[in-house]
Image 1 (cartoon, rainbow, N blue to C red):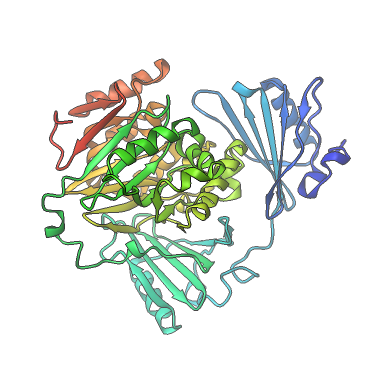
Image 2 (cartoon, helix red, strand yellow):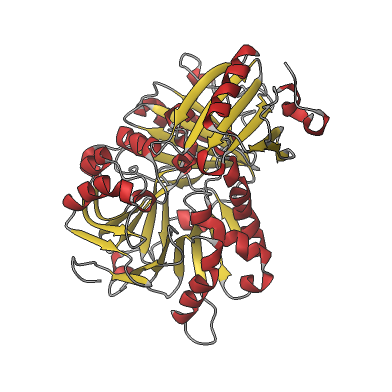
Amino acid sequence: MEKLNDTYNVGSLADVPRMKVSGAITSRPVDFGLGHYVIGVSGVGLSDYNRYKDILEEAGFIKEKDKTTDNGLVAVSIYKKDTLRLSVTYVAPQNRTYVAAHYEKDSKWSAETTFQNVPMDVFADVQVSEALDCGSGIYMVVINDVSKETFRNYQKILEEAEYIKATDNGDGLYDSVFHVTYIKEKQVLSTTYMVNNKKLYLSASMNLPISEHLHYHPKYIEENREDANTTIHMLKLQEDANCYIIQLKNGHFIINDGGYEEGTETLFTYLENLTPEDEKPIVEAWFVSSGTRNNCGILREIISNPALVERIIVKGIYYNEPSNDIVALSPTCWPHVKCVRKAAEWFNAEYYRPQTGQRYYFNDITVDVLMAQEQLPMEQTCGEFNDSTTWLVYNIEGQKCLLSGAGNKGGMSYIMDVYPKKHMCFDILSVPGRGWNTKDYFTDYCEVKTALLCREDVPEHKKRANNYLKEHVKEWISLDGEFKVLTFPHKIGKH
């Protein structure tokens, strides 16, 4: 079988059969780092993609996953041959196929990973996964069939081993997820226990920053919420862009996503108009739910225009950067993923990694991480990058607001597995994927009063599922103007 020619004979791509299509144009390889390389082949159709899959199987590659998105626009196949892993992604609107390759390393927790010296003897009789490379020097192992008592005992073992407890979500998020973070010298160890499926996730890293907003402080008491008049702003930045702004009692902001590059000036001007004259807007936290252009394209614009950085103050950017395996589902998202960390550097802001079960405290509100992709098994993804979305619950003056970002069915199914239905009651829900990813079964699982659609209307072929959601909420608010503002506590009909 012919391999990629000398131009592409680099790293893990050297042993990959070439996609030969008359008239097709193959890009130069992109180095993702850590031995991951990607090429794009333009001018190919679905039949070419399917033919290439046959070629791979003839060459001894074993298919591990083969999925197509609901709309049929993206198809993803995952292959393995010995230690070589291959992701082949066909994007119909672009007539392009992406081929991503890397060699797996021996990543048992006992190998040269950040898990060295982590106490693990207590799990000798249960199933412990290999250490998964989550990107950015973070490794995770999954331990199955762990009781709550074993989890509590493990906390004591860590403390006896001189691990210092840095954060603890106490009674757990909805009695379903318990998250505790430990520090020992430069090592940061996060423990996330899921009650329903009896899984314990251990994430280890070196020098991972821990947000000060994870620490409870007496200022976060009911009196601080009195007359807060906290507001959520939904902006029209660009068609299909995702952006929500929360203005706190102290006048500072939390940004949830930010939309496309084209909406940068609109967003910055809006923030400045809400800020006293001669002061810069202060963003306490900028949460990025997903590394797609309609969620964080704005950050690429910011790092290409230094003057923008001077207009606002950003204290922290929060993003659970996906693993290379997740990014391989949609290689076009890689530049956006990487620009998030770069934007933090430009703003001189800390770069934090939210994890499932964490609670952040900001002035008069709290933010719960309902799900981060780090705890979503690859086998449960639907073959679509939006499954890497971080789902956040904003608790504002006693009301729960679920901002779902671009969340898709893999994440929805996982949330339904982890959290009992009785806890999935929300005063406000942002429509998943701005109407693209609305699912009947998730609508049925949640009890929602108000639905927010960050656009004027949903695509025609998505209206059935969204009409079903409309029938099950008391209020549907879409963006039929330049912006919409909700003041808390929110009353139906008042916006």
